[in-house]
Image 1 (tube, protein in one colour):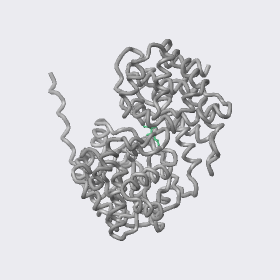
Image 2 (image 1 turned 180 degrees about the horizontal axis):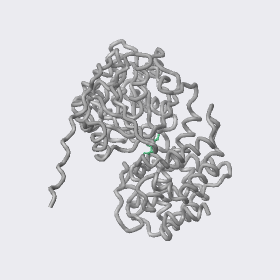
Image 3 (image 1 turned 45 degrees about the vertical axis):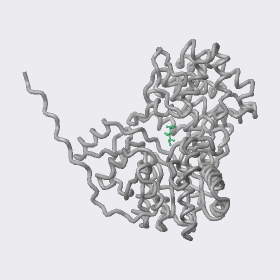
Image 4 (image 1 turned 90 degrees about the vertical axis):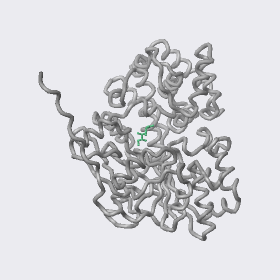
Length: 486
Ligand code: CS2
């Protein structure tokens, strides 16, 4: 019998070989998206135009990223995966990683350092502690309640912004620019509103100073970035000869459209990486949230229920690809404002190609996460606009019914679904407590954090949801999608 193949020697850990830049940015939320997107643009900016824009990355929760990045000198590999092959690039823009719960004072000290001119955020929708249906700060959020009671030992992103801005004001410094990079509509205005709300509770003069002096530009961010897997790390080690526990994989495409509104005009030359600076990012943002994230969520719930593991697998099924095209052409594009420089039908054609990229394994389960925080801006706004304008809503209502079915926690084969959502318990109760499909729809529509009262009370919406959910329960997601696009 031949000996079993020896396991390959573990490749040595990646080590930084470049000098660390001086820091100018604090970033909250150093997840895969930030490492595949913001840090790459900042690296491009410093390569092209210099500037002290190194990034102190701050994790608001766990030490995982810090423990993976710091032993590598904060360098890591961004892996672009195209159908034709891969491209690895080592990124050195991060200078340090802090873990906020371990030492909030160290984080505040960095944020109050005069060298820091921008604070960027990718903390996901729920990190803003707002009510998704109204966009307002949730004062009853446990993190916000904590930060109001202990403003100098914050735990939330808004809490850190307010405490750091208070320190800067007390020290006679200018505020920093706050740049939210999460998929929220009017992300700058929303971040400004919640920051001011929390600041006002602490000291109205602080709130007035922030309102007058700080800047909160909105931006649209786009790059598909699936969670890194052990297989990605192993494949990189085999290919490149080093182990990188903080590597990220992403699609080649990227787009960043930013409002040109920074404190003292201070910012990296992000245009070097292709970022566009505009006066009003609204139409770009709505286009991206509704065309991309809207269909992403629709594919995530219905694709998962139909047994598909990834988005690429889902759209490889012709019925789902047709469903996407139907949603864009009939239910989404007719209500959009034309963003400058975009050709909307071409944008959607390109999107379908991006979804099809077989080198990107973006799990439907990953995108299905936090649906209660995502649906309002991705899908429900389009439905409300369509109802007002007399346009169809059947396809989008099927997606919402798919979410309701998914959030019930049992898949079409009777297996449990690992539903991750801050409202998971409430969603499950809405599902389990109902005796009929009508009752189930009514219980979901009653969740005020998701559905505003006008939409919840719209009869045609309720009727479309009941029809769709009944069909999903009786015939399954694939059959319903097929029937819709037949
Ligand atoms: C996705 C987004 O996970 C999700 O909810 O829809 O992360 C999406 O991949 C990005 O917004 C693409 O830019």
